[in-house]
Amino acid sequence: MNNSLLTPKNVIVQGITGTHGAFHTAAMRAAGTNIIAGTSPNKAGETIGGIPVYATIADIQKDMTIDASVVFVPAPFAKSALLEAVEAHIPLIVCITEGVPVHDMLVVKKAANKAGVRIIGPNCPGILLPGTTKLGIIPASMGLPGSIGVVSRSGTLTYEAAAGLSKRGLGQKYIIGIGGDRIRGMGFIECLELFQSDPDVTSIVLIGEIGGTDEQRAAEYIKQHVTKPVYGYIAGHEAPLGVQLGHAGAILGGENESAAAKTLALKNAGATTFTSIVELIQAVK
Image (cartoon, rainbow, N blue to C red; front, side, top):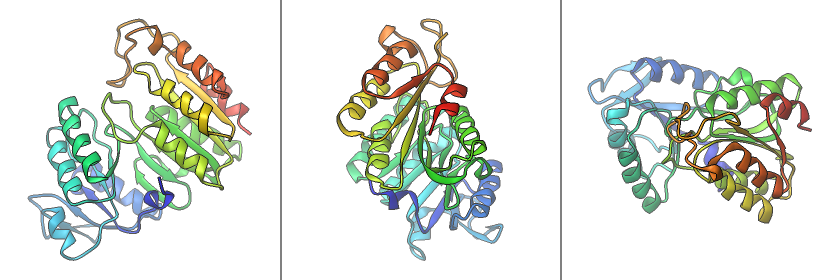
């Protein structure tokens, strides 16, 4: 993945007139992101903080080029919003919305793959490139410009890692929250590929969760392709079997989906692993 995808020049917000959409649009602008327009089907012609509101993406594209969309549309309508962005061939779509039904995301993901469109999320905090770009809800104040690549399934631990590293004076080039739903867009491997190929990234922090086997696939990719130091932490070492914890995808279905199994896979791949996020933050160099 080309890192220019994560530094879009022209960004729109779908659901810009909602409480969350309006609040985070202002925060993204304050962090340096160029928000050119937003959509809200029943509020076309209005403005939010001077940003024009359109009924549809097609209407925006009559006037402007769009490089990325950040989606705050409520879950029942998220499928339609995401498909609208995919069909408009917006290169990057960041979906903050939580509670998007699995079957809706299956349809969206299939359409996005066919169109060659990248999706991050849903149910994710988005992306922060400290000092450069903010696409989503990660507080810009938690980041510090630097050379660490952070990728996480957990929004809360994304914040904790960024804030902790910044407090130690260790800056980040990328902070990417990929979300914890079972069906989501971009995963660990795409982020590891980005971090490995970017000469400005000197070390990598990977934060996983119980449930699924994405971390094992990431470990295999690390073993074969990543030469930079990787620091890994899997949340949920005390998780009981069969109980969903927090995210839709964070459910321990078997031993292979446990924090212990995933930690061992990362360790065997050459990553330095930890059983607490605090220990990880203190160890990163």
